[in-house]
Image (cartoon, rainbow, N blue to C red; front, side, top):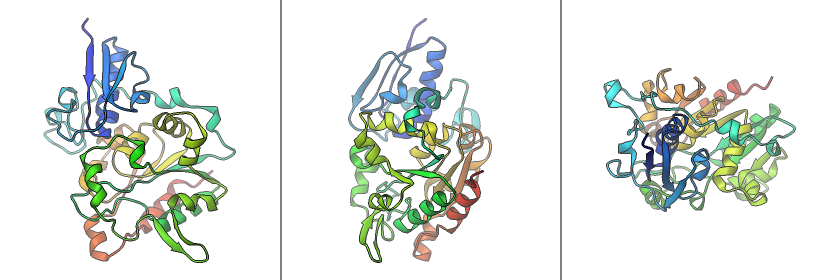
Amino acid sequence: MDKVNIDICAEFCYDIFSAAPYAYWLKQNNMLGTVTTCKEMKPFYYFCDEVIEKYTARSLDNRTNGVQNLPNPWIHHNPKISNNKNGIQDYSKWIAPPYAEHYSDNKFIYDKPYIVVYNQFGKDEMLRPLTRYFDLECLYQIFNILTDKNYKVIYIRPGDEDFILDQNDMNSSNIPAFGKGIKNNVEGIGIINDFELTDYYDDVISFNKLYKENSYSFNELQLKILSNASGFITVSGGSAILQLLFKKPSVIYATCNRELLPEYWEKDAYYQVISNQNAIPVIDKNEDIYSRGYHDYDLLLKTIIKTFSNK
C-alpha cells in the first residue's frame, strides 16, 4: 500500500486540527509516510517516523500551503459534507493524537490542581485595534478567582520568538492594542506587565520560567503542561483548538471572526466535537468593545467562577 506524505506550512490551527489528526489516522491505518511541516512542530507529530521541520514561515494561502490536500482543507467548515455550515467538519479520516496520554509527566503534578490561562497579544484583526486578549486587570481578577478556589495557575503567553509566524502575526506588529494592553500602573508598585504580575502570587506560575528551567522545547513543554491541567481559560483561535483536544473544561473568550457566530458553538460544530462538549464560549464582540470604549470581562469572570468551582 502506498504511503501518504503530508506537506503543510499553513496557520497553526490547520496543523493542529486538519493535519495532525489526519496524520494520526493514517498512522493507525499503516498509511503514513513523511510529515513535512514548520520548525518546532515535531512534538505534535511524535507518532510519525520521519518529521521534516522545513518551513520557517507559515502561509495563509490555502491554495498552495498544503491544506488543499487534506480531508478538511478549510478549518471553518467542510463544504463537501455540510452545505457550507459553519463549524462542521469531516471526521471519517480524523483521529486526535492522544497527546495527554503521551505527554503526561509526573514532573508537572503539583500539590493542587492547576488551570492553564493562555493569553495572546498581537494578532491581526482586520487591521483594527487588537481586542482579543486579557488585560492586566482582567488577569489579576482571574488569578484571584482561581487561587481563592484552591487552584494553581500556569500562565502562558507566547512571544513572537516562541512560534513560527504567519502573515497575520507579521502584520500585527504595527497594530495598536485597544485599551491599555497587558501592562498597567499598580498603586504602590508602578507599571508592571503580565509576566511580572505572576511574581506576586505563590500559586501562579509563569510558563516562561518553566521554559527557562527545563530543557524541553517550547511546544514539548506546552504539551506536557496541557496534559495535566484541570481546565483552560483562553482566547479563541489556534490555542483554543489545541487545548480543546485535551477534553477538559475550556472557557474561551472570543471577540472577532467566525467564533462570534452562534452555530460555531453548537454540539455538532468542531469546537464541541473535539472537546467532548467542553467548549464554553464567552462572546464580547469587538464592535461592542469599540463602541463602549472598553473590554467588558464581567461575563468572562462569572463564567470562570461557575466553571471552576473546585470540589
